[in-house]
Image 1 (spheres, rainbow, N blue to C red):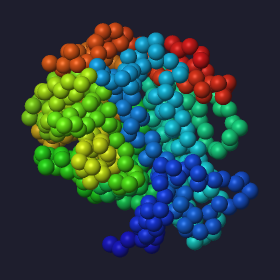
Image 2: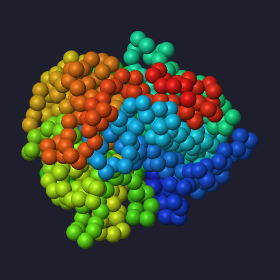
Image 3: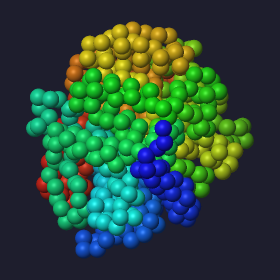
Image 4: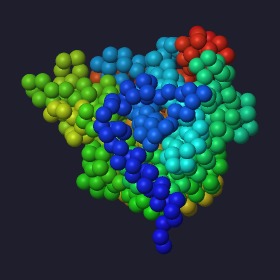
Amino acid sequence: MFLSEVTKMKKFIRNILVGGLAVTLFGSCNLDLFPTTALLYDEDGVQFQTLEDISTFQNGVLASYRAVQYGSYMQSIEVMCDGFNATTGFGNNYGSIHRVDETFTPSDEYAETMWAGHYSAIKNYNIAIANCMKVTDEDLKPYADLLMGIATFCRASSYLTLTRVFGNDYNPGTASTDLSVPLVLEFDINAKPARATVQQVYDQILTDLEAAENLLADVEGEPRSQIPTIDAVKALMARYYLDVEEYEIAADIADEVINSEAGYELSSTATEMTAEFTNDSGNEPIVQMYATQNEGVVGNTIFTLVGKDLNGKYFGSYFIPSAKLLDAYDRSDLRYSNWFTTRYPIKMNGTNHNGITVFSKYIGNPNLQSGTVEAGAHAAKTLMIAEMYLISAEGYAMAGSENKAKRVLNKLQAARGAVPTDGSMESVAEEWFKETIGDGFRLSCVKRWLDAAAVDTNKLMDGLENRDPQPGASDLVMTGQGYTERTLSYQFNWPVPAYEIKINPSLVQNPGYTAI
């Protein structure tokens, strides 16, 4: 069957925007600096006059989306939870959010980065959307519609992250009154919006995803796509439906992505794991952002921090795996052998220590480093097919279909070389922990499970509040209150940053934190 003319046109548009204008899109500007200097909006004028105008805006939108991936956006969430212990040489990096004690306040720099980074990106998405809506030129409109689909997808992604971090977990009984984050859908530098409810934010996420689904309908999925595709929209929809407790819908949509004609494949050998998680060349990413050695490099570096001295290479890790994390894996598990290593000693306070296990999932792509030392540089993978297996399994388990959950979960476990389990929520939760460690999912998972009592709450909280160090590392990690011993309650909802409240008095603080 021949493709429709519309499909042909959208494929042509995508090829132009991704490849044909590569100099405009990727070659001539620093993507990290571009959005703040080039995205403009004039209420009385039409910004898009040429195809190059649209491609330039797409450049900024994609840069904004990539800018809120990896780094502190993931690391802060991971070190807050139960997978890592701070080393004695961590220098108080991420200290307050690791301890979540009295020093975790509305002035916390990582809370401010999370909030401000996403709202800066949302500003750019809003400007792009507004400009796209003003295009009436018949020749340019298909290109503008495609860009609007990308921007609405990205806006939905940012709001999903923000509400997961700063708002309550979605509860059908209280979502209409629980506070989330402000909804800002138009660029207005003078606006001072109040916090919307959790229900309102999730409603807007769905509205944006439905718009993106229509606008990106003919942008076919492919592994490592550098722009959002229809499969990416569905993957984000699966996250949405899991959050709002529409479990069967979440599972169905996740299954659609798993069975996509794009041909996403789980890595199932040591070679494939290295290709995927070291060299960024596997077939698991639904979206993998543009990256070169000179620009576009991001990473989660605090877990390795490879250095080199006269004795050779060493790890200067700020955080190393906890006993709970290492104990979660069968030793036959490919994730254990690929994501954890003792290849170099860990150097603490001037002394090398051998045999300490370091988390090396983000050690760095050698093709993106300029020297001989692993720099933690990677192309950001924003959506992965493994997450769809987890969403599908959780959706089925929560809907009471443990046999279906087991079948999905076992496929993921078989690929990873792990011992198969049953399809209970306990098993699903454990697989989330093992598969997405380091990826920034842990906080939203914990909140979701605590709220729904889907797993053993006592067991989950014990691991969160008592982070035992891995064997042999007791003298290399920070211990005591705030480190290996904690008490958690209100901290699952991060504080609204003090600076944001100062400039916008319409905002109110989350319970448990001081107003400023």
